[in-house]
Length: 392
Image 1: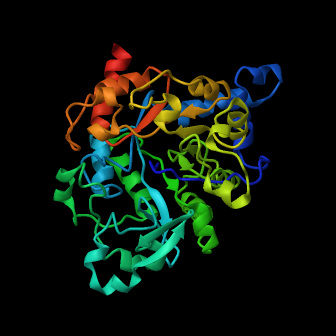
Image 2: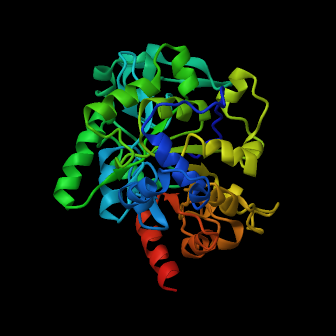
């Protein structure tokens, strides 16, 4: 998933009918009340939980863009290492589109900060300024490149000030396509003798749809091609735009998750459609009930689970975990990182921007809220923290 303050929209709030998820979802959301209502769903829901989303270990360790604490994000080097370090799920990847319609894995459409494109004189003229979800952004954009052109680029570390050690690997890996990720997933599942899960995100779907490069249909087509479009498929789909998740809900039966940025932000699709609601409205019991009508989980910022005070210290947890669980939603908040600047103030050690703080202490504080999992750049730290929490 992402750590930026993306915004997304929710257009129609009506639940589309006709996908195989309907009965399963009804059972999952209603839980015990399903029996009261006399629904046939609960038995199927139990089957779903044995093989689907709820079969994952808890708290689930999700490798954020792979193992991006140690390798440039959204590369096969990063994805591979996340598995080696014990991640249960790998966020592979943030999906954007090329000019010729291919899905590729980059944090953003703008690739100046995550590739060596600036070192390619043949692409100097492609540098431009665009408005991306209301923000004027200058750089190079995937939709201005063919896949063949993007494959001549190499990935670089996105935040070298915090991760100078990652720059050692600059230039080593190319940009993966989503189709390559799906093949890699199958290959790793065979090699490791256990199912590998992935957690791709549709990035800026309204932006790409306006360009005639709709994400959701392309995602669904590839998932169908590889037989990974089912309720129990090891592919969780996520987006900051609720309407993207609603659209995916009509196309595939995969587990779906709505990402939630800061409380005051508005999903960009809401901005585009004139929906006045903010994330604060979506995390109310009524907002969560609505989300549970078309998704199985939410991916909130950690601050929505435990707010910070003006000094950056953790305060009292909100009711979000309880409220989401009450309507059958799982919570996979983002993003835990080991470096000082990304930790609550009281867990920092020293002042170096790239030094580790007390990440174990922070993990314990967040796990104690009852979250179902967490996105982390440091899967190995999370695995040890989970063991401490579960056995402690």
